[in-house]
Image 1 (cartoon, rainbow, N blue to C red):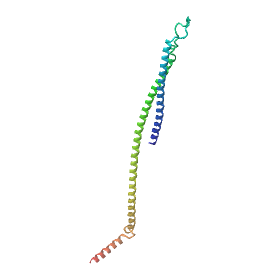
Image 2 (tube, rainbow, N blue to C red; image 1 turned 180 degrees about the horizontal axis):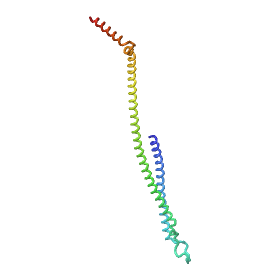
Image 3 (cartoon, rainbow, N blue to C red; image 1 turned 90 degrees about the vertical axis):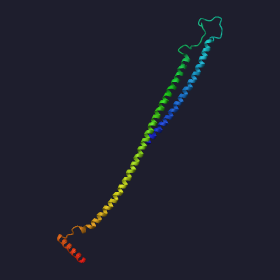
Image 4 (cartoon, rainbow, N blue to C red; image 1 turned 30 degrees about the vertical axis):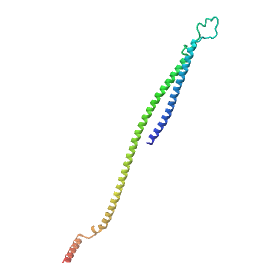
Length: 196
């Protein structure tokens, strides 16, 4: 039971630390997504205005052939900065989703562990209570049996002592059968005389 309590305490500490870390990660990812979205908005507005603006403010009487159209930046080349920011934004969104999924999974696992541990602890506690009660009952029965044994032993000792005391008068003390018959006959005659 103590080991189970220690494991539950340790799991709770680990879970709290993991939850704090996941919460901070989710918050950072959301803030980062907001910041990237704002940066994208600013850049898109800037590039939209830049496309409308003329490339050079100075007007030359004759434009060289290279400048057939106004310079609008390199937005279309491999996505540019906007493409890179969109990738970063999707990375933060994926990080947030993954962290939320991991948090939910870890919380479910923690809840399952705690439920199983509580059930196990309850069962072990009941088992301890039953075994303790049984032990007390057995000890009480043992005490009663010992008291009975002591009483019986005293009775046996007293009976043996009385037997030893009576033994000489009951057991043959070296007198022959004929002598005993003669003594009995004398005793009977003396009793009959006493009755007359």
